[in-house]
Length: 332
Ligand SMILES: Nc1nc2c(c(=O)[nH]1)N[C@H]1C(S)=C(S)[C@@H](COP(=O)(O)O)O[C@H]1N2
Ligand SMILES: [Mo]
Image (cartoon, rainbow, N blue to C red; front, side, top):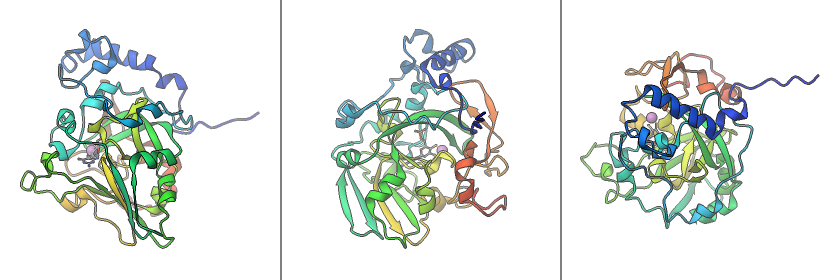
């Protein structure tokens, strides 16, 4: 008899259907009344907002990639919990370029997502710039259900659309001597008020980095869409990283540049406060952030608080990337 061990992130398909979104919604209506005051009036889950009556901004209307959606789901990536209703993902965001609150979706609509060029430079066979739609046409597009865990101890789940980061790395043709990929967000203080000098005094643009081994691991994903549609601007349109075994700040939004390098990049939050935000940032319930215990997480869209899992539950795929067993190495 063939016994197939279910891997930790796999669960039955029905968990990720809109039915469970509906159940989720009922649970909310029953218990989370204050939080979703507008939900009782809202006919669709989409109308959910964590900010009551405020407008929900979904896929950009003028996104020329709309015709490519939805992408075929890659069934290898399943969830151990319900799918978070899209209204939560669309209205509860971290994107400091547009403000330091979670309620930045409206401000993010100022970002122009076309034309959008992506640059590949540093240790590559040949530096080049490519239009995002040309890049999309060259990538193996698919949908994956992923968890997302912010270091602030909340989590969501998301059906991402996009392509494996490994495919983009292949496309960029880095030299075999390159050890890291450094990613950079757009820089435009005229549309992103957070980037104005003095507003936070932060080292803009936002930068993140991965080792080439991490970046070519199966799980590393570039999201171009969510919930079967192009990505809303506030979630990082048109290109955003998803590394579900790491804290959310690694998942850089609005990417314009991939630089291949020998030197470990200093990421945005690491430069601001290396003691609180390390380069590795792998999820570990046993290593607390100075301001947030990481033992548990609030599952947004539910009333649940659940134990956090090592590597956010993705250890089977990524633990081998981190041979050093010291509790703090790789988790800061
Ligand atoms: N450019 C940029 N990328 C960013 C951030 C940011 O402020 N700027 N915030 C990060 C953090 S802390 C988190 S938790 C996620 C939030 O993604 P979401 O708004 O889609 O949930 O984006 C990450 N990517
Ligand atoms: Mo975060």
